[in-house]
Each structure stands twice: as structure tokens, then as C-alpha cells.
Image (tube, rainbow, N blue to C red; front, top):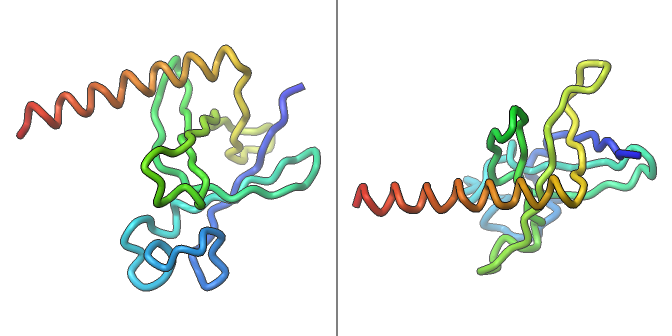
Length: 124
């Protein structure tokens, strides 16, 4: 059974989940408030905080790339991929991926990022 995860955008404030003043206070130089996402597991009600760092289209679907707020200053971060779909009631929800789909999406995103790096290198 696939678990649907509802999401909402969380405004950055004094109760920020990442405890990094550079990203949540003042002018929000790293991420703006629309980048903070709270996912709620619809089966357990448990909430998880993430930062939406990218999204891209692959195989006629839109995928979101998320990182944990605690990883914001890390050199290497764990990427979480989720599919953006419309639920029966018209809400946008994020759906977890099975292992095969996750592997395909990761490979496609890696290729996409490599192409972006190459095009930036060519522009310089």
C-alpha cells in the first residue's frame, strides 16, 4: 500500500525547525519561506520537516527533491525524492517512491544535474 503524504508550506519564523539563523531569520538569504515543507504521514499523523530544494519532470511526472533542514550546512546531503500528484479531492500530495522508481529518479536527477554543471561550465 502506498502512503500518501500531505504537505504544507511552513513559513520561516522563530520556531524554525532547522535552528539556523541564516536561513530562517532576517532576510532568509538561503531559502525563502515557500521552500520549507512539513510532510504529514496520513497513516500515522507523524510530521516531518524538509526543505524543497528542486523539482523536475521525468517520465510524465513531477518529482520534488527534499533535504532535511539539519543538513543545510553539510557538504554532502541526503536527497529525498517524492512524486507530486493530485489527490482525488484535488489537493497536491507527495507520494513516496518504491525502490525501483527511486533508483530511476535518482539516476535521471544525477544526469540532469551533470548536464546543468556542463552548461554552466560552457557559459564561463
